[in-house]
Length: 401
Ligand code: CTP
Image (cartoon, rainbow, N blue to C red):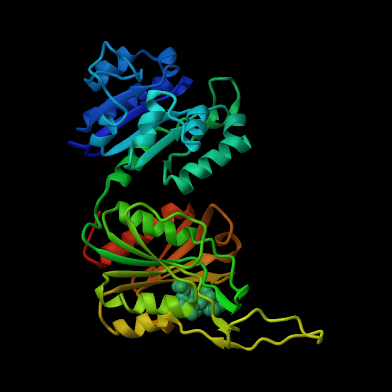
């Protein structure tokens, strides 16, 4: 049985690659699942599959041209305003490039630019095009800055005769990603997430910090908001934009973060400490720039920062709320160390990451431990890890998928 998409309004964008013929099957599945599908095709897509095919399957007029006097006028504002989600399958390298640079040169890119809801793209292209640094960069921009969701292409035999990555993802995978994005199971829950490093000042121009990018915490906040939660993101200095529908509270030092978190803790259903809080800070922060001395060495005295997660654990005592989740960065014995940390800090949940890939990688392997045992995620994206963690938090709040 297919997913239940009753009354969901989907804009289905089809851009011009050989995989365009597969969008017909996708459209059929969406309609059969109850969705209302409005198809928009690029000029190039019409060379691979006719608008008549898509019109017949979707039961609605297909739009191709920005200015088409024969059709009921579809402005690039009107269509996006009504839709719950924009699904583009296949998404060509050129379409991704246009969107990454904010072009609105044809109807599908103009609609994409004007659309404020979630965008799910399923790229399909030749392997070399997929691996080209320009495509890689565009995908990063679309995912990290525009908040797009990507169903990565699969590997296999391609239409051009080669074998490799670039084949449009299976219809089932696209449908699964789509239903995941439309889920609102966290509606009404208040979730606080911390992210990024803290920065501990030595003087007005120097500081001690760490390499945390904030991406894990931002992925959790974005996913929680998408699933309907009311999200507060207490963030150390990072270069990431605030995810849509998330209230960001910028902080700098561990002391500022402590204040921002503890001051809001009583109002929260779930608190996720994903920030890399500095364990120590300089004992004093000089009001003016410290001048170079004559000595060859310099000693900076560090004092311990408050442990925010520990404070939250104490605050909740034996209570179920807020659900408190922390992270642990480990190089070995993931489960044992995570359970130890969970007990020490009285957290409900600890996510143990392997340090080797947690810092830089796009994917990470994590073990999520709580009082029921452990879940090994295997190698997953930060978004997928966020989803798994939120599933566990949701269950503790009596919510299920
Ligand atoms: N944390 C915190 N306040 C601190 C330090 C850490 O709230 N001053 C939180 C982090 O946000 C994270 C967890 O505690 O959720 C990490 O715990 P920590 O004891 O710092 O562990 P690690 O740094 O992973 O490892 P180690 O035990 O080796 O220090």
